[in-house]
Length: 265
Image 1 (cartoon, rainbow, N blue to C red):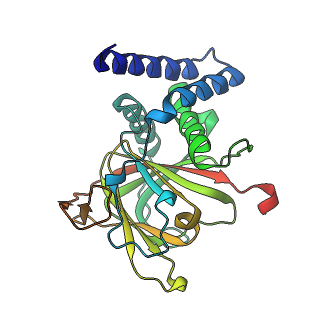
Image 2 (tube, rainbow, N blue to C red):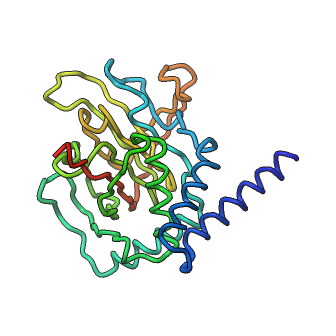
């Protein structure tokens, strides 16, 4: 087969499996089996995009495997479905000036419970969780997931440097980015006395994943409009760099967190 016909077959099969998982006639066990088949077939085709992670100024202790970005993780159709779902839910909410932990300003937030979203959106959420389990969590371990949260951050909103609470959430913090590109910066927690930073470029439809030291020992924040990202081609070196100024506008993020295992509590 030609590469074109092969890729066409891949796209058709991907869409068929996704729609099968979203079908209202599909029961829970069948949906789980379809998602497992999807990940077995396509996991080898989905690799982190190294050029979206700038490690030029990374601290010596930074582990590149603990902070990755998958470009175009969603199709445009899937992104449209999520954006529509979030827009409807956010419509009657007001932007909050601040949060109880004082790390986010100018935002709206809503929970995306499994029983409150349509079948197609639920299928996207389940596919993402299954992908995270397959690639970033311990294999053959039962994983419980906290409810997904959607965050609407204004163009001039702020997400300040913080480490997500470890009281209830577990090993992975991941997010799907929608609407607008932004830069996420990781830095060693202030108590650990190590300079340097790592920048992640998060374009719409991408998925970022933080685990291990990047999840527990590095803070993460969203940089303001006009921040500059340096594309080193994933090498972390200064040769043949391409710089881009990011115009950060309103953005949505869909946050995925696994629950802390009972033995960890």
